[in-house]
Length: 150
Ligand code: ACO
Image (tube, rainbow, N blue to C red; front, side, top):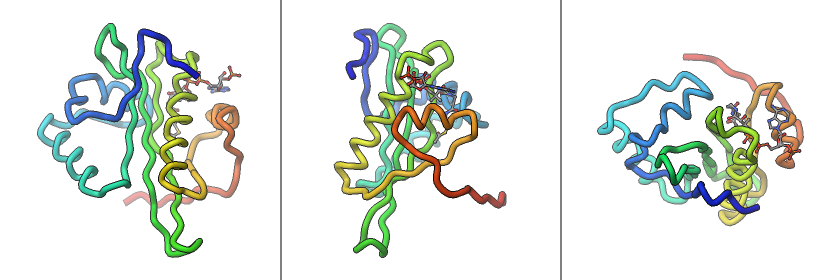
């Protein structure tokens, strides 16, 4: 599915700190902005693990601000003949852009990356309210999440 002409999709850039990345992430969870230096350092740290961290963003051409984002992290296993699992994380679409299939576009793009990397499955955690969205994206419910905060 094509994006509308006013939007573009690309990998996250080290300069996206100034393009509203934290406003976007705040839709999702507690995401106070870090300094541009810390942002660039975190970006470099993720890039230093080749073929592991992939973040894609959708940008408004008009405002040069991020309007959607999402990540896939490729986990390498000893099981499944040294197989790989893709973990989808941090999907967010800005409130004013929700319902325009941008979430679906981000998920489809991340799935494409996971497939190209050779992942045998892609998994994610979400709350109950988001289950219908992920079902529309082709996911099905399996297992339960456990957590222990540190
Ligand atoms: N309930 C039911 N159906 C939904 C919902 C919902 N909450 N959200 C989307 N859908 C449906 C749409 O109606 C559409 O169906 P259709 O193809 O029949 O028309 C389909 O799912 C695709 O919808 P999109 O337009 O692509 O969804 P959107 O761009 O609005 O993004 C998202 C959905 C990501 C959940 C967005 O609402 C959002 O950012 N929410 C706040 C942050 C959040 O909860 N993120 C997910 C956290 S989980 C994680 O990151 C792994």
